[in-house]
Amino acid sequence: MAVTKTVPPERVNEAIDSGICLLGENRVQEFLEKYDSYRKEGVDIHFIGHLQTNKVRQIIDKVSLIHSVDSLRLAQEIEKQAAARGLHMDVLVEVNIGGEESKSGVSPEELEPLLLEIAKFPHISVKGLMTIPPVCENAAEIAHYFAKMQQLFIDMKQKNMDNMNMSILSMGMSKDYKIAIQHGSTLIRIGTAMFGDRK
Ligand SMILES: *Cc1c(COP(=O)(O)O)cnc(C)c1O
Image 1 (cartoon, rainbow, N blue to C red):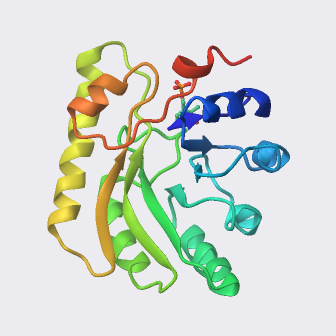
Image 2: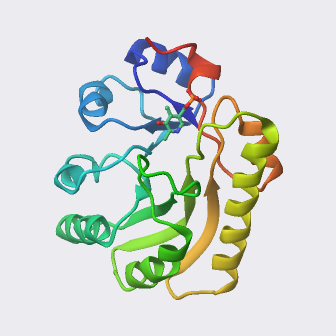
């Protein structure tokens, strides 16, 4: 995935022309401002940022996957908005694997109960998990978090919960994507390594 925050639409379109077919957006306001300028044919857009419940309706018909479901309240709002539009929304549940207070995402202990609740919603399908690990000093430390996440993903998959197809593990960014892939990531989210440093 090409993560497009702060990247002007002309450059995003350049990336699309070069073969990029998946964009990741993480700010609702910025996304809405740029959305009409994107050449969207053959391109999927995912929402990857923290999502406030009152913003769900603004993006729900513009993205094919929301990576950042981290509460029942948010899932309820997605269900409501999807039902109102007669559409179906795929989501990932975000896990706060480092247990950081400043980060969104559920704790590993909260994950299964939340998944069981979301599984009841007819207009939502959980497709997997997403994480943003803590800032780490070295590769071994980051590998530790990714390994924990991989295990959690495998555990949840093996539970074979109803209405759930755990196939996506979204983890890894510009600085750590190789380590993430070594630990089972199926979707890496790349910003700076593709577009350069953000202002
Ligand atoms: C910005 C961002 C990325 C990309 O980070 P880079 O280090 O620039 O590759 C990935 N995921 C999320 C959720 C982001 O907000």
